[in-house]
Image 1 (cartoon, rainbow, N blue to C red):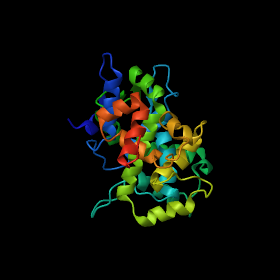
Image 2 (cartoon, rainbow, N blue to C red):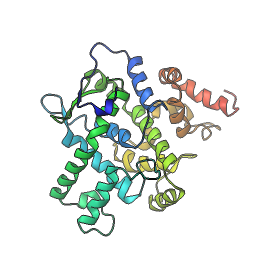
Image 3 (cartoon, rainbow, N blue to C red):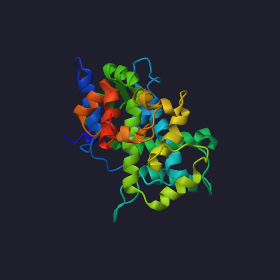
Image 4 (cartoon, helix red, strand yellow):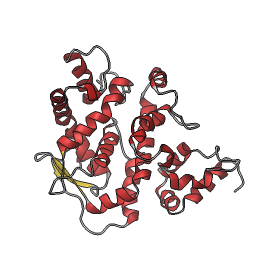
Length: 292
């Protein structure tokens, strides 16, 4: 089935176990999930950020989702110049990149400006264009990658409705799910962008922002852009996994980037580590030849 072509879809009914829900996310973050662009990572982030903006029918409109989708993409494309799609001969940039770049030119901006400085009416028109272009594939694609468990949707009526079981699950495990999404998202950027882009990002990041040891610049950037928005500090994003590592002579050897990568390598391991995070700390230490 070509999920990206679906005009509508309904989430599977029936009681789900936590294992079944974790397995759906593991599939999304595994190499089995094919990503030609960054759209799925951005759309999942948009859904999580808009979970509290449902209407009286428990639906989230495409307008709300793609307003957030546009806001997330604005700095990534226009400020940092990050490619959102694998570049190859004969292939253009994503429609998302083209729409954002054209918007600046057509509205007379000769440099980057924060999206907050854009007139409300112009922003609405931009969101409409991006919604019309990007809804075509990403909504059905993410629906399929999540094993038809995350949401129902209608492209004609322009809404997404979350599976109540998955919504509760995401709220319960929000920090871990977001960290895994950031890590896979950053890994995608790492593969498709140049050293020149990396250097440009480094030049723009706040010098006071703390990049974690051995962390990719793209993972650091996503933290800089989005985790700073959270009311809790960045160090708490996966606090459960790091409490045991806050002190001791080997604290710096097992870093957060290692943990994020390890969590989506293998589903059976992920279930075990989430049930007992200290096992993951021990595994990473053993990999480095440290006695535990």
